[in-house]
Image (cartoon, rainbow, N blue to C red; front, side, top):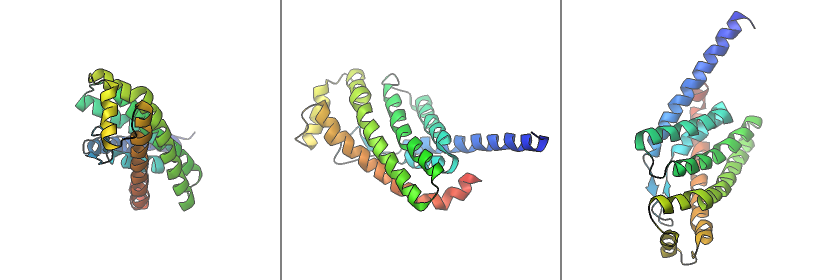
Length: 204
């Protein structure tokens, strides 16, 4: 490898790290502004931080998307702390990665309009499935344990909104799944709307 190639390679790595860092910080800031949804319990809130993660993943690749998502969670822990011994943050990380990594990986191989839509659909489906599993096995038990709330109380929050919620499984089916689908669709549509407008900035 020539000296010029080495310099260009090092410059590219520095630029990549800089872009990932900026996007991670921006995603963390947006993470602080979340809004509740009327059809979900109060601890399920809609945020737009994943839009930044998706934009970065589409522009820079799945590794960058994963790095931005991870940096966002790390910054949140550093500045906000954790009241679930990092279990809730781990769940959020898994859900975020399940959205951005499959989407960005597919889009990297199919950089067309059709490819973008398919990539977004894959991400929404993946996040919906992983989100349900993460909530059932990780997040909800963690909230119950660390907040001192019996699972029956958490389930009752869902029952108050939708009477068919009677246990943890139906809570995940009728509360978690619709929330993740709505969140995924919103993030996907905004990502699709913004990507072409900002991709030139993200690519440099």
